[in-house]
Length: 321
Image (cartoon, rainbow, N blue to C red):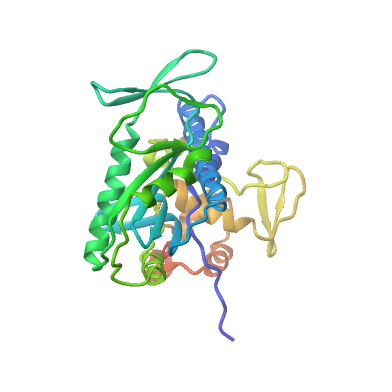
């Protein structure tokens, strides 16, 4: 009987940063920066969720199809787009921004900054219009490549409840979550009906077929964390330490006695997400604390990984999807 192997993906960015924080010391020089990165990643996820939830109230008599969380590439050009609304009039790129405080726009320098409330601290921000225009250009180019005749425009949605606009640029549509659907209606009202080259459902299926997993290089490399500063061991989901030990076909925490047969799955994902894109038996033994190479071989065989080389030179990688 053929063994069915479990699929394995890299950890989502926010979870990967959270795992890295658990493996570095409380006084690590990069800890504050990583905590800020975690906050931003988590805020982005919450913002996208608010946008999707608000869209449930969207009602349009024409044909339309929303597509969320796009990860697409054109050659070496990779983009992440929060939402794309396909309609019989146009396609609308939707970028969410979960930014709180007072939002200011400097017309002369074309720069954004926000003033924190109540501290009054001023922080500069990337101009979101540039990102929106980049995403619009990407979708136009992708449509042209696939012979899709549909105009493309965009909308920036600020999702934080405590966001106050003081000034906004005139060259892009920017709104808050509660205003989003009315802005979408306005865009559709001002856009003529288009002779779409193929049904929206077919375009949606084509986009889905062209999704690629967003892959960040291993976080220790991306954030320049010395591997000597990254704690090894298998994580315990009860006491939150890294003292799980392999006992027969399970894992038992040396600190609290918690038993978790599937603890190795997270450990393998952590290695690929935090340490390196290539894994060997020896490297996983060093990372997990398991000394028996045959045990590690059986662990790694459970997962549907790309395998190259033989025996001691065998290398494992996450499969491209």
